[in-house]
Length: 167
Image (tube, rainbow, N blue to C red):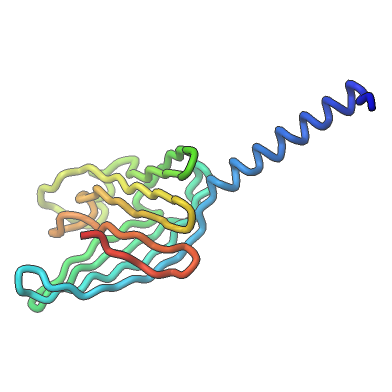
């Protein structure tokens, strides 16, 4: 059976559109999580607690909020980041995973807005790595953590909502 050039062009266009839609949907992230875990570190009980919401569409950040706390028997520390901190995102769509790199446009300004007046490194990058149903959250963001060195690294199962804290 002979296919007309117009039908062939239309079929090629439709194939390209569906492939583009698949790639675009792969670059979508829409999740909320709430996690906690108790550990013993150097013979002291510690509790980790994290909650957040991430909605990204490619490089566009639609919602981003994360609160990460670490409690000890005598004191606690927390870190938080949200849309008011001036965020930007980059996305990479690799074969088996999609990776976002969320960072601050101006870390010094974001830190000042939170009222921190003492020295701390001003870097802030949060990597979100989605592989199948797993979202790995890998922070390097001391700029927004007051006295705490960083947010807590963890993984969230996007289907079940269960969390795993990395050690």
